[in-house]
Amino acid sequence: MIPIECYFALSALLFFIGVYGFVTRRNLIAMLISVELVLNAVDINFAAINRLLYPQGMEGMFMTLFVIGVAAAESAVAIAIIINVYRNFRSDSVDAIKNMKR
Amino acid sequence: MGNTVMFIILAVLILGSALMCVTTTRIMRAATFMLFVLFGVAGIYFLLDYTFLGAAQISVYAGGVTMIYVFAIQLVSKRTLQGLEERVKSSRMITGALASLLGLVVVGLILLKTGFYTVDMSASDVELPMRTIGAALVGAGKYQYVLPFEFISVFLLACIIGGLVVARKEEKEL
Image (tube, rainbow over all chains, first blue to last red; front, side):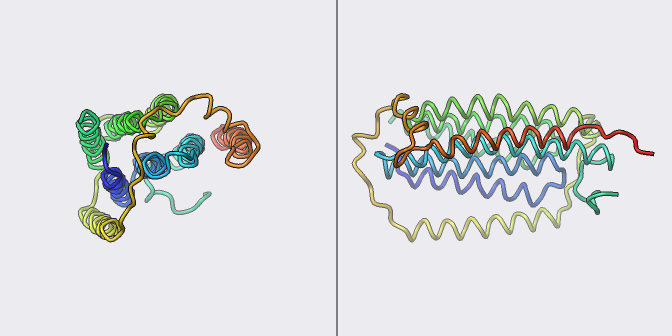
């Protein structure tokens, strides 16, 4: 059996790789992909804590399930906004957007 | 033993793909490496005996969200697809690396200072039965989840309508 600290270490590394990507990249889609990495790190933590520390409950599993659903909806809306931004500004970089509407 | 080997393989896959995902300058490669990360996380769920969760991860994330990203990349960035990649300023790179290293050190110290009690692992090696998951998902009692289930369905509907409203072409107003 794998100790829970291994899952925590994996999840922390994945989380901060995502944070690094979010700070570094200036492309809107690349920033969204980094957010997905962060969300997946959190999901690993929820599932591992539920399985290894409280195996009689199911709260972490359902939390992960709902996070997956919410993340799918969030990325769909974000992609719609990005496509609209590209249509108006002809760019997909965050530096190009100074105002919400021009 | 087999679990440990599998966990190491999955961890190397996840971390390597995530590093490539945030460091590659081509946006399509970043999406592909994100797909590998999502498959690795699904493997972690299978390793934890959450089969339903792994199936949901593969079908929703790897099947749905990645497709949305690929479509968005094709629709948005013709420049980045043709090899002209984005520039990353080295000052921003150093700032990002410092910030994430600082956070990682803080989290690591907290993990090292905190001891976790270990529970009896003998019961946790069986798969969570689908009947239990389904009953908990639509039950209204304590530790049952019909309210968030209904809420997330309304939320998905709201997101569909919101996405359509945001992404539609506006008529020319003169």
